[in-house]
Length: 481
Image 1 (cartoon, rainbow, N blue to C red):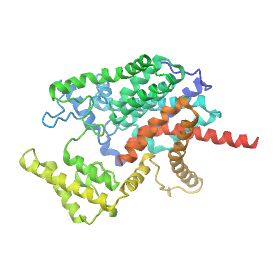
Image 2 (image 1 turned 135 degrees about the horizontal axis):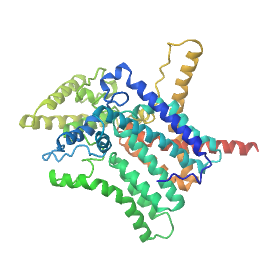
Image 3 (image 1 turned 90 degrees about the vertical axis):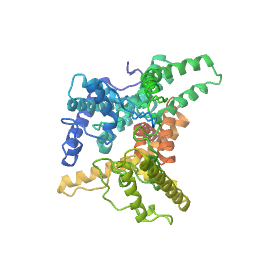
Image 4 (image 1 turned 180 degrees about the vertical axis):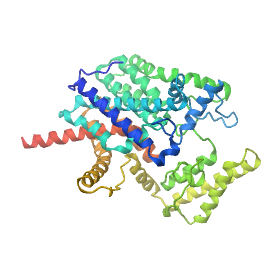
């Protein structure tokens, strides 16, 4: 794999220094967060890796395989394959020569190293297409100022590493569009496959690629199109084939990655009905801190807040929701059998009825739900001003809070405007825009799902902000001249 500097005026040594600085900063931030007292219960590694809430669903089956040689995740009755082993493969490699805590720390460090490289690649993606090259330094500036985005790096979960892989895909795909080099397409295919097996909601990007090639030229060349499709599909097929065969033989089901594009963990109707109901309310439906914790809490989590006032309808009251929560928690502890099956039907019917009642009484529910997601899409830092310092330290500390908060919103709004300029003016980068808009509009807003879905497209959105800044400065200087 070779990174192309031929179309860039950026100095390799300056980028190497920047890479080292970003890695150092990310490591420092990760170690600092790891040692915060309220994170003590999440510590998994020895100095940096900590639990994401989903960690055990990714790695427990891998550790079981290491210890016993058995990979027993899945249920023949429910046709549930659980999480795929793809993220766990990185952990498996480290476990060959490191004990568990050190292997987890190594995985967290890998995520940081890859993420820093991805930011460099973002700079190289956009730099040839802007007039004022200094704007590419917005990317590392965002890294240093938007600390909330760094919280995902040491967490043992797929978000950080899949984000880095998607950026690597974008870099090589743009390079392929510019040069027509099939090796670039091969690398793009590999990185998209690596990201997609961990984040199946990225799979429609393949369809976008196939569509892009079909209409890239006025004359459709089937042989060339089929060649591109074959190269693009091969890494995904090779990566998924062993797990697909295992699921077909052991569980008698076709599941190359997991059961759904949305979530690979729980696969029961009650959990799905609960998530759909809470999603309609515009609330976080996760069971490890969100409103889903009120109904079906994960082990070690409790919901200690008042229920939001806007979620009620004439169909149900606060007391009804508390009764529903008690039934959900009873359902969680029951073993399979007639009583659990009977309660399952009651709970699914009740939550579906409550969801439909809310939709009927709040026809604009999707707007509210989408607006609630907007605050998580960019993860703006909270405006909690620091009153511990005085004098110049007080001024600097609170100034950084305001700056990072404003920059977070600018990244979303300015980035979206810049993406529209890319669609109009920069054909080589147009495909990056379709990826970002797909993730933003479809999964984050239209489905009103988890806002963290957009974290994976956050830095591609920053390409739009850089282009917007460059166009604005160019227009202003042109007008003055």
